[in-house]
Length: 273
Length: 341
Ligand SMILES: Nc1ncnc2c1ncn2[C@@H]1O[C@H](COP(=O)(O)OP(=O)(O)OP(=O)(O)O)[C@@H](O)[C@H]1O
Ligand SMILES: [Mg+2]
Image (cartoon, rainbow over all chains, first blue to last red; front, side):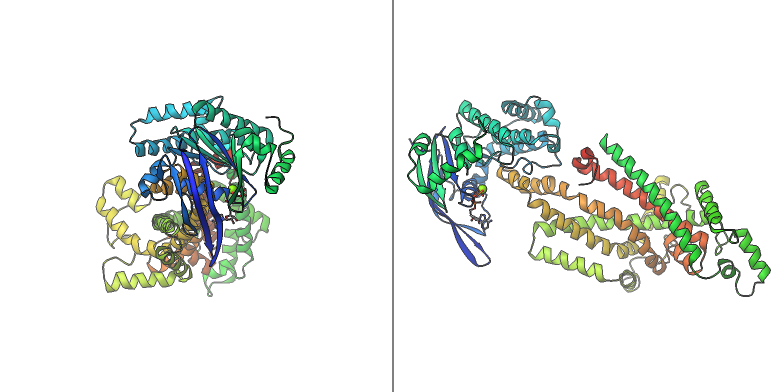
């Protein structure tokens, strides 16, 4: 079976002030339909750059994509016309933002922000939904992320919500247009460990219930164990090891992976997921 | 609720500021050298005449009693007699303040109407030619003295091209009494005399433009900085990642949160505009309060000086309260937290 998302030999460099840094050196990874895959690596290894390349959010320049393909649903995103590329964004594939404090617009209500996103997603997909339909959908996704009082949350400004609630809103945002692939870049790292654990569980439950493919990006192997069945380990812009999660934990082949595993108890030791 | 408490606090604070202001101007007015009574009467007046006027004005009383009289007058809305015009200061201010108000409001309107879009354009095309142009304009507008701009405009549009009037608020001999608000445009509209509205606008254009350039440059600069600041926020990238179109991102997601700094600065600009208005009023023979105030200062017309400063102070305080409300409407964080970010 071919994968829903297949990154093949992706190379990206950044040029700033005349200096060029190779940030991704031939990265390849597959996310099959409905699978939960993790991309793990230490800070600066190139995880976010990979995610941005997939979402089409790399600032070019300074970034430049030298080589590789990003196949999504059988089409190469890198050669797709900009319009079709934008049409996929936030609809077929969408992402869960990391920082709940800064990823929501402070001057608009939650409902306003979600319905705006939905409105333009509908328009791109040629879907016909009126204002009330959009509102109903917003309330629906807010309930899906286990918001206790979705009506009230919808009317709230971000500042009125706790960090955990805002992170749920960010997940709801990603689910709005029934995507097939969800990319989550370190969701909840800005939250306390208990809340983060709840967020990860919620994410896993949602992905399983709705049959979504998930690409979980993190530096924390503890998160990997809880949210994925297949792992890619990234170091300095290269995939250095990959395999089913259980196997990788049992028999890591690389010293780099062993170091990452050794770091886990310190990070999540107190949390029972 | 927090917002009302916030506004109440601001109001109380404003009152305190006004009391402070009254003390300061009272002290300054009494400390400056020269005898107001002597100056008013001229060098040929006799010593008895001077003493008589001093007693009439209360200048022979101890300072604290003089302050008491001054505050008592203020509380009754009595600003006393002007030595210069020999009319009550109330009357003088009632006739001159609307002219200055109309000038300053028009100035701010023009500065905002052009300054904010210029700032938005500069931020949108950062580091390319629109940005460079706006930045150059802001600098030039800031360093060019108002009197120079005023004279330039007057000569160019008034004498060379002869397309706009260069003196007064209306053509001489116009029979129109602005007795509702004192603002010609507003009163003209209310009375349905649209030719008055049109003439008032024509007369306002040059002085208001001259006065507005510096503020316009300031608005553009602040708006640009604020827009760029917001553009770097995560929520801007999030909106892009969800496919919100650029136009919506610019005007809805970026401009509104970026709007608070220019609004706040605009409130502060009112102070320097009233101060700066006198140059423009003198050059364009504008019958305004700023020019009246300057004349009062040079003639040591104490009651008039204090009246003008107090009225300006009250106006400034009211404008800034209004701005606080506007800022609260634009940014819910301020409304909810009950304080400025
Ligand atoms: N806009 C940019 N300009 C220049 N270099 C960049 C830019 N964005 C990323 N990089 C470089 O790319 C490399 C990888 O960055 P990336 O953000 O992908 O790391 P990461 O794996 O997500 O790390 P973290 O766990 O800290 O989020 C870094 O060395 C960084 O310096
Ligand atoms: Mg990252």
